[in-house]
Structure formats: C-alpha cells, structure tokens
Length: 191
Image (cartoon, rainbow, N blue to C red; front, side):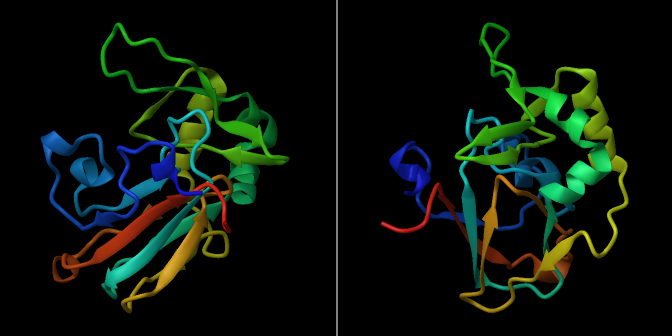
C-alpha cells in the first residue's frame, strides 16, 4: 500500500531536485540544506508510524551525488541499545498552541524494532535523545558501516527500509544540479 492512500495530500510520486536554500521551503530538507550534505534521517519521522519503505528512482543521474545509508545495528552499536530505547523526541510544532505527543526514537511495530530520527522535524526531549543527537552528529562512521549508492542511470532504483536505516545525501556540486530523483513511499510490497 502506498502512503498517498492514507494521506491524499502526499503525491504518490514526488520529484526531488537539488535547489538552493529557501526560507519558504524550510519544511523540506532541500529548503534548509540546499545543495549541502543532508544529515542521516528517517523520512516522515514525525509521524506516529513512519512509512516503512521509500523508493528512489533516477530520472537524471549525477555521478558526484550519493545516497548514504547507515543501518539500525550500526546506530545501536554507536549510541548504545539502552540509551537508544530510552530516547524520546517531539515533533516540531507549527504553533505554541499545538499539542504534541512524545515519540520514542526506537519503536516496535509488526514484530520489528524500528528507528526514527530527524534533525529538522524532531526535538530531543530527554538526556538519552540528546546523547543520540550528539552521536549522530559527531560520530565518524567507518566505511564498512555506511552504504553509499549512486543513482546514475535513468531507471536506477533503490528501496530503503525507513524503519531499519537512516539515510542522507552527499553534497551536490555545481555540475550535478540537474539531478532528478523520483520518490515513492510504501508501507508494504505486493497487492
């Protein structure tokens, strides 16, 4: 099932292009970070249950831009299982009157532990969440722990388990600003 069936305001296929930072688009990574590197995050981490998968498909490739992935197991090793499972975050508020509900960084759904993290849309609520943020910001991930994928040719596709991996994007050099990626959110595969 795709997420657009749950939330009709989310287009089924979203077009991602590098762009310069824009204060009108601060609710998007490209609006905040522009062509700079994107930090590791989960898509829609502020949802009670984030979409399970996201599919990225190349329309126009760029050889100098990579999608980077770090698995849950590496994050758990770096932060510590106990700290990670105690960490609580809150979604960013649109107004001071908006009520919010704390969310666990590690959640359990469908017999599986998942992780949510987002530097833009989630704020740490307790010391374990602050520690998680510090590690994710400052940890030098070993090459063997990070997976780098280059979507280069039209049709190149990657499906990311949004519960079991955090993902980011490398910086976009000037000669790679024509990159175009399609993104689709999925909660499951099949009919």
